[in-house]
Length: 433
Ligand SMILES: Cc1ncc(COP(=O)(O)O)c(C=O)c1O
Image 1 (cartoon, helix red, strand yellow):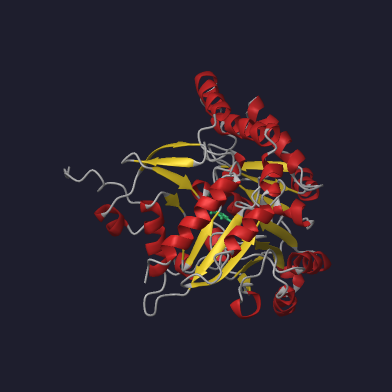
Image 2 (tube, helix red, strand yellow):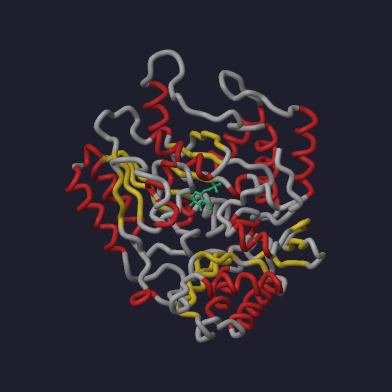
């Protein structure tokens, strides 16, 4: 046994520069509504809903109580060949929020598992349809399926050959055409036509599914160009290819309604979700699957287990209880509508950063903004990381991804919170080199 004096040594932190963090740790000890409390007692305005997840704000009493009550009543129930009422009830409630037809729900524990679940369902036993198409710069979690269809280079390059038979659409980021677009940019719908070339190259009959984030968040907020998602839907339908929208970030009010699909009026065949499903209070993910696909697999299989897939914690009672309480909060407080009523104010506020030092683009959709900084010569990503640290030290949590600062606060925000976030960024971005 090795004994170490350093209490931070044992934990290998995810997606973190471990050495830098442990040299200068920043820790959180509590949270309430729009704020975290840092371990030194400072209040930090949460500009990121944790990690795009705490849409109803922190430590909401009804969600806390639902988790506590369930933990004391039914701590766990195996989900294979057994059930419990909360998971059935949550599935019905989620299914009612999905676009028409996507009314079958499979529970997972994370966004990554939701993506890998959708990718495993996609071939539907149709022999030749095995290929998957993702998109450059896409973030679809960290399972082998997700990083294979994903397109963030650093998330892929350490991990071997990944899944075979995967191709990628081009990403839609283009500052020359779209810098400082408000909402969906005008330019870029034609980029969906590349799917036709990929289909021509491989043959439609070899392709199971295309997966994209309707609004790409983690890669730095890439808003879909007007007409782009519609084109993807048109081309996939024409060729009998499934379309999966990865809505792990965009579901549950982030860009308007319950889903980006519903808000934008483009219905895919499957939707992956997580995060806002339980307000992040207990880990949970889900896949909404079109009834047609579900019935094809379930009714088309011989007697016995129809899908050899699932998790020990699928539909966990605590997660299901948190999910039900979360959906109640969204509904009873009209949170999606409240957030939507602030979209215009949010857009004007974040775009007021145009012209500030280092800022080369601002983009927005729903209650999300991406503020792109010019990379520091020879040291890409450093500027945004420095701004992240400065913001934290001055009471604001933002997210740095590459050279982009992403904002996605809880949907309970008020105009004063927006003013505070934008004001602080405006002030602090002037202070970094
Ligand atoms: C679009 C998308 N898919 C999948 C994931 C992975 O989710 P998780 O970290 O819960 O596995 C994320 C996480 O941010 C995401 O943004």
